[in-house]
Image 1 (cartoon, helix red, strand yellow):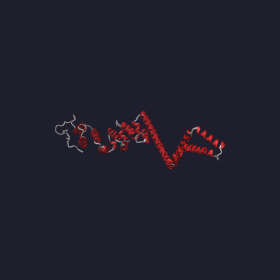
Image 2 (cartoon, rainbow, N blue to C red):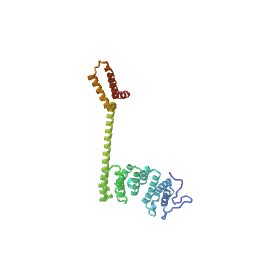
Image 3 (spheres, rainbow, N blue to C red):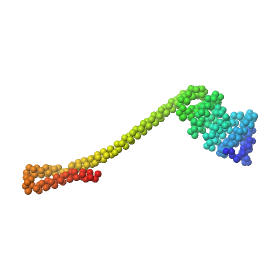
Image 4 (cartoon, rainbow, N blue to C red):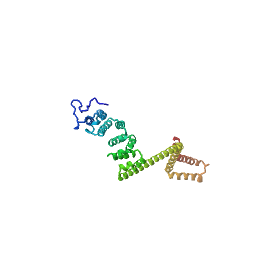
Amino acid sequence: MRSSSSVSPAGGRGSGSVRLVSPLGCPLTALIDAAVEYLMVKKDFHAALATCEKGLESLDSFAEQEESCFKHAELRSAFTIIGVQALAELNQWRTVLSWVLQQYGETENIPAKIIQMCILLYVKVGERAVMKEAVCDWLHCSGNASQSGFSTVAELYFLHILLPMGHVTEALEMLESDVGLVAFTDEQRQAARSLVDDQNQKNASSSSSSSSNTNSDSVDVMETSSVSKQGRLTLRLNSIIKLLSRGLSVASVRIRSISLRRVFLALMLLYLLIARLDPALPSALPWLLRLHGLLQQMFNTMFGPYYKAHNRS
């Protein structure tokens, strides 16, 4: 979206605005100053992007004045960097790479500092795969190896794209290829191999932990099915055991509470009735009745609570 504020090639931007003119008098540098002001001061990101696009469109018109102003490549790079920042502020990061390619045509022609910005931007939003192929093509272009930022691009590609995405084999191949030999020193390649080893250990540990979790889940499922099959039988056995233990506990308590004196008295009565008395005599009847009552009382005391508890359950 273009802002309603007009930016003239000479640098004038409406009444009351600050006139930004480069000491070299180049109108494109005035556009760069205006784009920076929109981006950094006024926070008008749409106007900043529109100003950058206008400056990029005007570059071919000022091709003859390159030597009196800035170099053509430097002007294009400046407008592109400001435009990328404006797109990021507008949350239009998905269009950043395609917008940059519109300015340079091919990935191999993009300057190193702009490639670095794109890598960091797409890594930040978690879209590493978008930059993987583009950066790989850029690194394998022989003309880019002479740029000052070539090593930085290779390092960002290795650390923030290949390793996080799990392309360990490709990372090792990169270290031994012409790209790795140009971009890294021997010490840097050794440190990079250590990082690859650490990544392999992390992958192995994560895979083993996932397999152990899978095995534990299968064991839990088997145990659950076994419990469901034996559930009814277990519940029945538990209820029977509880009932028996309750009856035995009541009976044992009652048996322990019986006085030894009563047991001795019962034995004496039995001895008198059997050895001393004749059951046919009338005088033996009261003893028999007392013995019957005593035995019935003992039976009720010993086993009566058990039957009552059994009937309640």
